[in-house]
Image 1 (cartoon, rainbow, N blue to C red):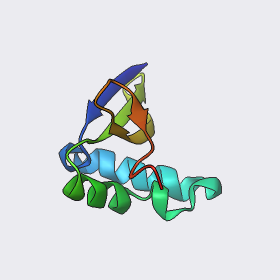
Image 2: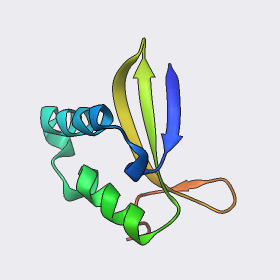
Image 3: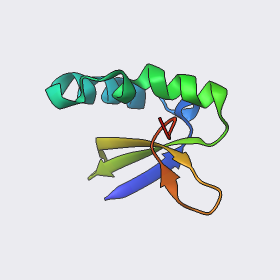
Length: 81
């Protein structure tokens, strides 16, 4: 497993497409909070927005958007709500 951490604005076109496909393929992710556009808006508004891009054998298998805490902890995107 490989995990890369970056800002939403630094995602490649392939990663953006994979994010959208992942959300569309899983009905439980049908929420604005899981949308790539929401992460991009948070990235524009806050400088601590990050996304973990998870790969297995080179293939993207997941994304975890979060707000990077000052003390090394992660919080939900745009949290607390």
